[in-house]
Length: 490
Image 1: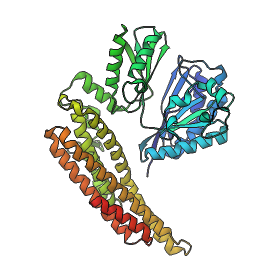
Image 2 (image 1 turned 90 degrees about the vertical axis):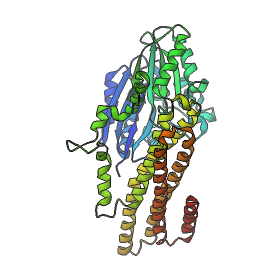
Image 3 (image 1 turned 135 degrees about the vertical axis):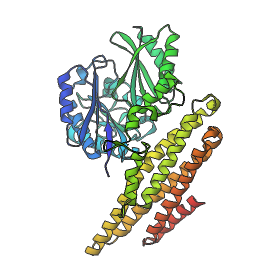
């Protein structure tokens, strides 16, 4: 199964192009693609965006950290942006065929390798954090390079997750983690008063009572006050809402936004949300966008209805006279479509005046359904792959007397996949049921369809569970799996 992971390492160099070129060159590997590179002289920082297969992206990030450690001396570094290391932060973001948990495992592997190869101590953050205090990057980076240099050996709370309690003399330390997609968004104000930017940042960031999923700080950049922000969940706290909040707060001090910038990349959906908000387009949906409609093109010809193009290949694969994909993959697909329908209904109700009192519940539902949808999509391939492993195990057991237990092991994995599908589909069904009273009654047929598909996903997945259990020899595993299945059917 193909895996696609994004990595967005931030390096403490934004003025010397030759050093940044060398870091990028070190990260060039087969299977790794450079999407973007940003340099900022005032922050003295660069942001590199790469994407590719899991293994290749891991190796590229390790090499990038090593090259940065060779070239960047934090003892000589000056810039507006806080920094702990030459390679300051290295986050992994799941894109396709991987989960956030997979990215956590990647972060831990990369952190260990950075220490082994380059002797740079590593802290884990966000989803990979080893303690609640380290989930927040700001807590780890407090005091910056100079502060950690003074405390790392004497303060147990600052002991790195990988490496000795001593920083690299020139490269400092590195923070590695796993997270959802983040938008780095900066707004310039029409003033040179950096205190205004700091006050606005304090008002909008979540840690001091502002907007959820917003981190913010105020800086003086290019002679202008800048509100520098990270939006950690743009679906729940959209970029247009952040812009409006900054504008309202700045107005209190006689300032206005003059311009804004994106550092790195931004999902198309975030811009679609902003277009709908600022243009006040009635009945807006993403299918009104030409490029989205053109995505329905197959082989240079528009497929019937446009939408058919996206689902037809999978349907034809199901119809093909091959063992995979089969019912388990179809069940996972049904569950993901159920989650998608729920997200659509909740999103179209959120922001409407009639449902303003339910905005928190709708936002929570959208966030969870989004994660469930991604997990269930991943399970489409995972189910097919698990069946192939079972077939391979039977073949190996037949050819080798020393392969005892290999079939049971493969069958257990092939049982766990549809069991997890059924559990996730059951959660989707519960959320869909909760949306009925707090969303538009005009969309009840969409919720009904979603609920029907979620039930089909549960029953289809559990039928695959039962087939595998019939061949398993491990009585305890079989009993526990049937208890879980019975609870899901109740």
